[in-house]
Image (cartoon, rainbow, N blue to C red):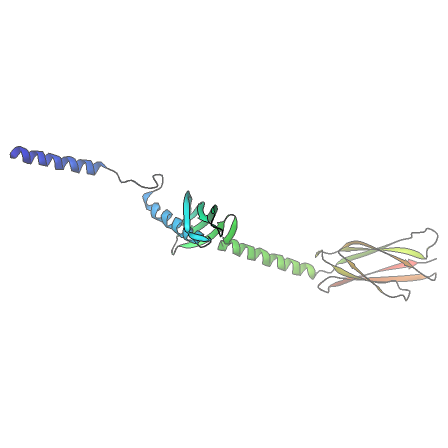
Length: 234
């Protein structure tokens, strides 16, 4: 009887030693145990968002992917999911998302097959800032009068009644501008459109004398510059 009790005691001792020496297993042996719940929650948040973008979410089977840890309890989850499309064919869809767990779980970004479904707020803010800066720059450029210079050439040497007027325009907006040309001889004012660069206009004078050419160039904002040039017709 005593031997039976001793044997039973040894069995319990052996069981205790075996149980005490065992170590718990984890799904992520390379990750600290405290981080595993966060990773699992990040994957869950991401997969729920992916399901909302599938045609048949009930048929979805996720393929093991990758979870990368960033600072401030932010995780990048990438992978793929097999699910049926609108025609019932099984297709594989890739996804990539960022999940923040610093406080309430938040899906910060999601891309499905390269298409951005949810944009990172930081990216959105940066884009809005860049757009505002571009708008301010465009406004400033539109308020700057175009630079206009004039030059004259004579297509037929010795016959100075015919000229070719070159209007050189430099404008920061690089958009359509209106060019008004008064050749100073009482003829109708000519209207031309230009996008900058050089505009060549031919004109023939009827009488020999000195004329004053006036050219006004206005941009889309109505900001204008005027240049003048005297021409002697002999």
